[in-house]
View 1: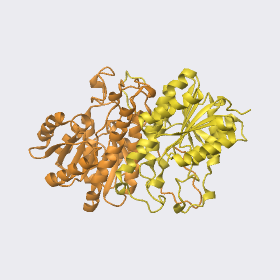
View 2 (view 1 turned 90 degrees about the vertical axis):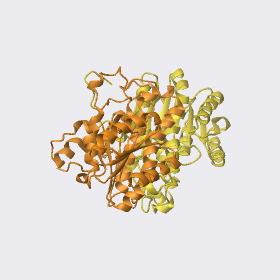
View 3 (view 1 turned 30 degrees about the vertical axis):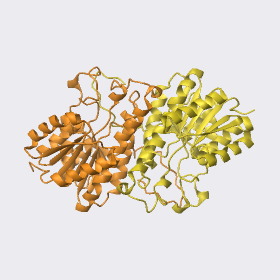
View 4 (view 1 turned 120 degrees about the horizontal axis):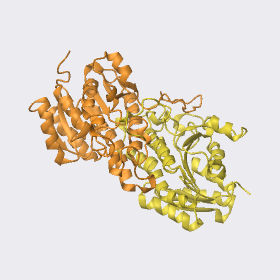
Length: 282
Length: 286
């Protein structure tokens, strides 16, 4: 018996890195997985790994481009056709800073030296992709009266770290959008939250050329505990939060654990908010 | 007090056909700058040009129809500006698709995220976040070569970035806000600055429908003029990576008091949650 028995989870960017690590942990807890990726070869291999954990019926690999409206919607519809429902969507697929430079912490290009297309591609995949996937999945989840949308963004200061092109800005957009999703979903039984590793993680996004030893990075497995919990029935009251996997401390009772590792999505703590005419409430 | 502090400067204002862009173009022209008005909507450009010429005098402005998301068109437009009025020394990224294109009432009521047309959501991100990146990419090498320049990005209030019912408007502005911080950091030591300028709340432009509030109770586009002119003046040399709120601008204050009152660091560095780095990592953040 697992805490995710009967749950159907779609993970984008599920063929490797954080996506695959989360998928494996959820499969081990009984979930059925729809793995979405644009890399067909890696996807088949990842599906094989999930199969070894949960059996043949536990996984379906779906080749799809998350920022193409038709492709994104088809991935969601296919998941529902195949498994009969969709309980959780992990928007994990992203174009990483490794696409900008080999050592973006050191000798990185300035913003005007970037190929403009790479910036645009990051906005499309990293910010629009999650919207397109969530827009397709939300109606199913609302009808079920249960659903989880988990968006993988980045640390608040990495959103404006130079040398990573559009990576940070695209994640800032997704962070803000998660707060919007959470508001829109209030009272539906569906939640939207952010989950981040909490710093550079041991994935292909941080290449060896950064000079950081692999074992000094946050390991993808750090995502597993909070991912399983967010996908489960237990997280129903958590809405519009950002959870930091590196601060997830399984030893603590859940209230203390959340207090330690989470904060509201986006930046509501800041002052200097919009000045509104007296009659407007929002 | 210098009455024409922008004399000799050349500026590009995107989205200059109406609203805040038009007001800022007028403000720049009235203070001596030569201004290129860019807009995707050719129909509004001529009327806007007449207003800017009236503010700055004959020959002070040109109008170009251009889509800021089209790389070739953006490069051609900047080349044309350079040939006709010099520079550009100043780039104001004002062009944007507002909440109104998604059917928002301007106050947070509008379609849920799953009801929004996917192509429209994507398009607004492209215009609002990628457009400024592209324009800045094209303009900045010339500014650096000349050792002086200004990039002003118009974003939105920090809590409007996650206001529901407005499609990708808020998220796209969050991306631009973050990118302004990156621009400022990358431009350190070049003489070129990058800052954010926002009205500070709903402004009297087409982005806000009549039903939200009486037009007179909104922030008027003219509020953008003084801070925009100041940011483009040599008095603002060295001011970079800041966000300024036009509604809080008070022309009677000293430079320092003004920055204190209307300014703040760009983006959200005050939020405590920051990345956990390995001890031997080399982050370029802060």
